[in-house]
Image (cartoon, rainbow, N blue to C red; front, side, top):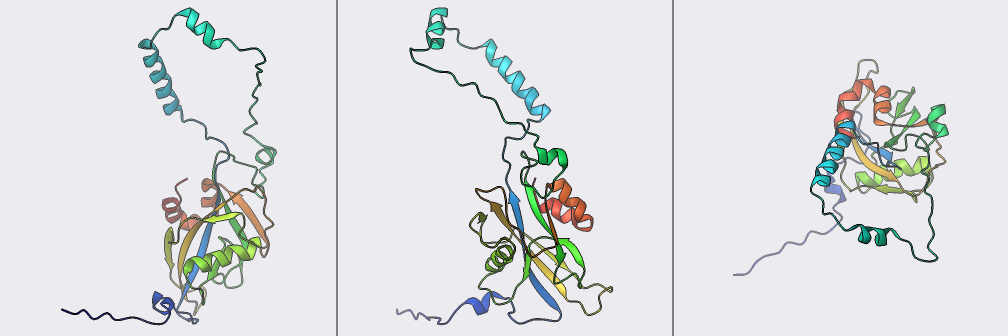
Amino acid sequence: MQRTITILRGPLVRDRGFSTSSSSSQKIVASVLFERLPVVIPKIDPVVYAYQEFAFRWRQQYRRIYPDELLDKSNARGKGDYHIDYVPAPRITEADKMNDRKSLQRALDRRLYLLLYGNTDGSAGKSVWHFPEKVYQSEETLRKCAESALKSILGDLSHTYFVGNAPMGHMATQSTEDVPGSPSVKQFFFKSQVIATNKFNIKKCEDFVWVTKDELLEYFPEKAEFLNKMIIS
């Protein structure tokens, strides 16, 4: 029995389901959750510390006991050995003390997220706090649109890493009565991370901040429930 194979020619971008023309009733927006990962190990939770202390003492009861002469040999240093005194860097930085939210040198044991202050397509000419974002137009994919949004404020993406090709979250916003005729917005969030740098030359905005998750929720109280579910820590 012969099989008939149909070959589809032409680009598949047209079938992605995104309109490349401007629509008066709906907009698709690609937003970037740009995060800096923790630089130092977070402090141990008191409950976890108590368990580790208990587990250590429990193991000590049943540990193998070695002869003293064997322990003395293992602790002895050979000729020419040297010892380095390790002094850990302070966990609290000057940026922490001054609450400098423009600096990446703060909250070293937490994740920091970038927020921008300025006009967006959905703010009706008003300056608001928002994530790096861009209205989808003719990009090949939504991730390409998100990359373009982040590149426009950083200049390049050499110190960024996008985690996956799919969005991490989606939120639909209906048009409001305050702005008659304003289109509804479907907002797709993509995660990107800071790589090998502690400073960016951020432009094309009136202001910006690097904030923790708790601080971020203060900027978007009306979206706190959604953001709290989307952002783990």
